[in-house]
Length: 398
Image (cartoon, rainbow, N blue to C red; front, side, top):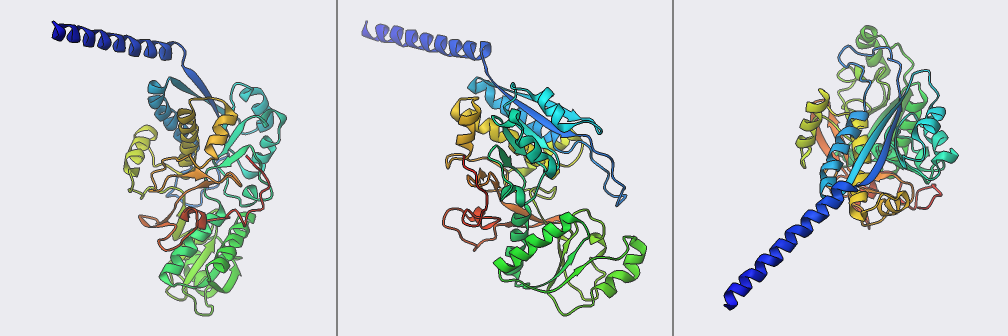
């Protein structure tokens, strides 16, 4: 008799539990919490081809954001949340500010911004953007993380200082301490050269020679004579090149007067993402992205993916879609984002820069991942790359 009563009670409890689960799922299905995200970019003019090997890719970034939205919504099926991505692409001759004000509106508190440096702060300073959280997935400028930082902008790509520090750490490990620095003619090249000088001083490298490239960009003449003559300098361990547009750096390898490796913007490069990266589950996302996009994932794709995933991670953990609550969580010690690079990623609360390992890659192989083993920090080794809190000139708080 007692046994039958117990069985009946267990059946009743089980039935009630099933009814509870069904009711919870019904509530989620009927009233999901919505997180609206806008992706803002502008059409680009196709630049003159520097090489026939690399075709111009016009949709860098947006496909990464779309993939992350799918991942967020997979989790959202269990948390009662729905992530909506609105793509806003400004025409080539369009006005970015007008489009932001008209197309984004109050409905989208999170905006993934894939625009040049001069547009980031112009948007961040708009009255309509003050209560939004912007995710910069395009720039690497140190100044945007320092004196020109904005407290409503988070930066996803490693800045120039992080990249230069990653290279310097590996050079220190190899004991290639004497550098020959070659700088291009553009402002971006000069900015990267500044970051390289800072890294050299920080890690005990010696720049034995420094030159600005002022020769032709014609490949035939460069290959035949210019490089050999240009690189006849005092002895050095490694040639460090600052050529962000790729106008001459590719011609330096195997053509220098002395047999020396090339690093910087060509040769061994420091990057957030690379197609040769296969560790820590990265093959899975590389494969998924390539199946969706028909090409390899590029840095802006990876940055946009991380931006949308960061929103998803914060929304899932806080069970909220409130922009201030999510921002506070993202800047807290509790936030940890899977980035397929071994260590969990997090935002620096003093400048909004995403902490992350930096890949050191040759064209067809991954050479190392910085921070290099042996470089220590009281909080996290990731802060040995770029501007630590004591070095930062950013004056914003969360």
